[in-house]
Image (spheres, rainbow, N blue to C red):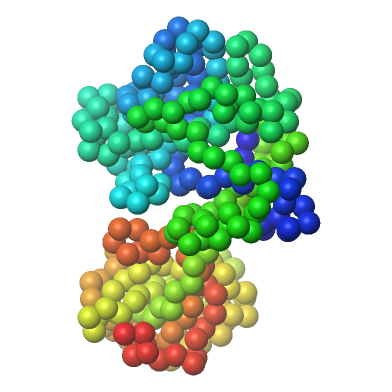
Length: 310
């Protein structure tokens, strides 16, 4: 069951929802036959059990009842927040068990459990979320590499403030009466991402294709540190056609043969401009290298000069 993007439920209906912290990792279904073995499958059905050997003890201590659990495999940073960039070092190792075992010591994975869809021979998908959640919590699944994070009933605005202030990715709001709709992107589960804003300097662009021929498909943006412009990412969404057309004219006037970034970005077909246009972008988080994750265009900032951002 997948969540649909949306807005935070209003105070008038928030009591109809439970709120969970949105984790930034690899979705996984956990199969526990009850015989001391475990099978872990990715969202697409791929068997990834061998990639995460630290999850095997979960089966050993689970007991004899068969179960199917839903959760997210994450790698935690120094602040105990899920860090997808760290997790990428663990993904794709299902075919290399020896390497996966070595990496488990360097970058531990952690399974965040949030639903149970099968338990003790009974399929639970027709039960409401609140009942399934109660059954999951009664299992008391907490161990060195797995846990059951809290789900908070109601109080959406307060939970949102907590998530925003803690620098987390967002929330999942789940209707407490919702059934488990396997394989469906349901409106009963709503993902609400925290979006942050950053002022950036445009240093280049990449031409668009198809209906965007002649217009920027994406702009290459940077941030000033120590008097130099450091590449922060590529922004290709968030504009209307009129905004792209206006931006194309501004980029044409600012065209330059020289790359303005401290290091040339690894972008094929880039065209450079003088670093004098400032824009504001939305983003969800940053990579360890300082790149913006999931950036989208918000607006031009003609009221700001590049030197204002130093």
